[in-house]
Amino acid sequence: MEGRPLDDPLQVQQQALVRQALDGSVDAYQALVRGHEEVAFRVAILITGDATEAGDAASEAMVKAFYALDRFRADAPFRPWLLRIVANEARNRRRSSGRRARLADRVGRTSLRASGDAAPSPEDAVISAVEHQALFDAVRSLGERDREVVALRFFAELSEAETAAALGCAPGTAKSRLHRALVRLRQAMPAEAFDA
Image (cartoon, rainbow, N blue to C red; front, side, top):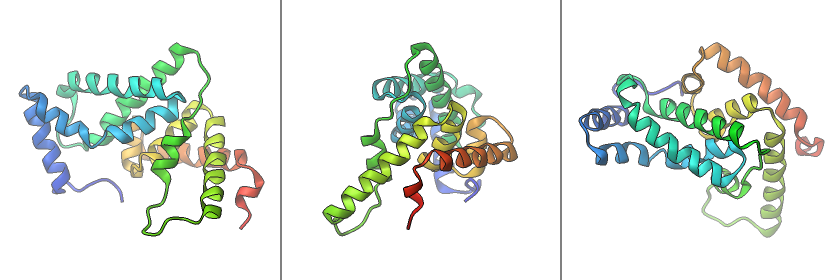
């Protein structure tokens, strides 16, 4: 899925909300960002490694995005633009705090848990928790640039084009950054994670 077509009802709705927000409607802006709050928090937490910092970064980014809305290109998808602001704010907070990243894996586990009708067996739940912990430990060990591209592409579930837009780079650059990050992520994962 490479971005939404221009006639996508969601994008048309978002463009209408952007126009209303530009005309001063705070309610329209709140409606615009409401559907992106969870993913903004997930991106911020993967970059900052701290739930409090991530919440603050996501909130501050929403405010900054509101004031920067006049610079948003109305024909572009809103989500990558917003997540780029979130990622920038999270990076700034991480740098200024000087703290090492700790991932709030409870948020990540909840967002990554596969949905199904039947509850998993206790054994499956334990295995799943161990696998998620190994994944988050490996993501935590990555450098900032690698963690960011992995967060945008897989945790925020952006397309390749949206990931490139959120990173502010060409699609080919984003793709190569993602490839290198995934190689490093695979190296950081425990060997038993690949046993099947």
